[in-house]
Image (cartoon, rainbow, N blue to C red; front, side):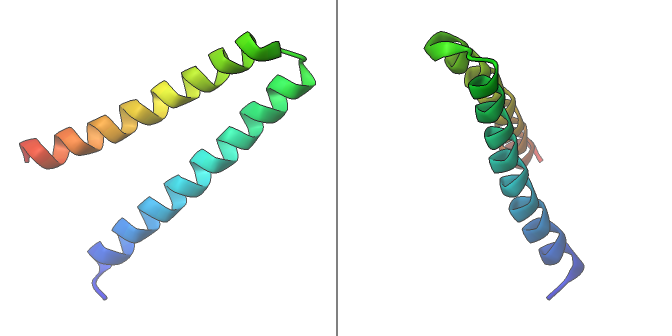
Amino acid sequence: MSEEVVATLGMQIGLTGLILYMSFIVYDLAKESKAGKYGTIVLFGTLGLGVFGFVLKTILTEILV
């Protein structure tokens, strides 16, 4: 296994874990602050936009390079 493969797998697994952990944090924050349905949707929407931006950047980098 080359260093590139290990780094790629580590990045994918690590980021997936980080995204899942951030989702748990956002859920706990919404629950503790009694944000309601709308507030929870807004919180997860912002997290989703951040994740979408990261994935889009990765896709565009692969396409353009």
